Image (tube, rainbow, N blue to C red; front, side):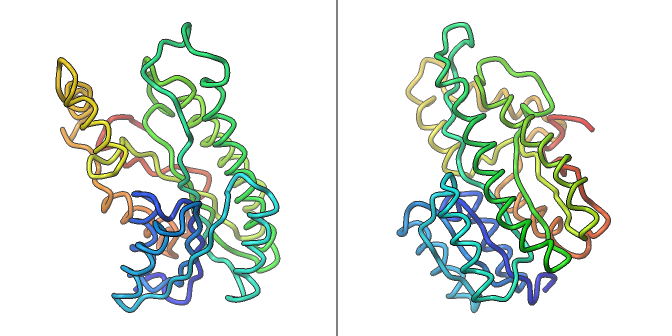
Length: 259
């Protein structure tokens, strides 16, 4: 197990991707602290982890609230002694499918604001402790609009681009302290709750599944990455096996974007 004796915090751990990554971290030996807004969702993930002999604890945390994030991070360090991994996978509350010229300012800026506020807060809180311990990994996740133009994604594309730029700059600042900042760029997982909801909604339209099929057709592998594939990439990136990687995003888009 390549994450034995590691302590990981996961924000948005009750969601599809956050939960999948939390389970994968735990399977590889990490002690995971699950944070999110909904206790029942966190409990479901924790129950799965504990059933397999893993270590998991939960906390209701608003990852957009600075005091809540700071208090949670301090509590984890007080209990576990350190934070080795911080992963933020909360949703960006984005609005898509509307032309930019018809979109409200609030709907456009909301995902950018959410992405930057939460990633800044969680990275800052973890980074302060990681500087003291001289090491750690800060992980985030974006999507294909960070590297390819898409119509009708509203502020989601700019949010993904902003997050990747923020991560590169943060990596340069924290690198001298032995802290790595890395990320995953995904094409979206068809077995995630977000995609299943989209499939359900499109199934009621005049051209069922057309948009999802278009995403698949745009990949080199003619498939979209499953949550297990995203989780496997996350495990590798935060492990010592990726100790030479920082300031970069692993391309797990099945060839939708190129590096």
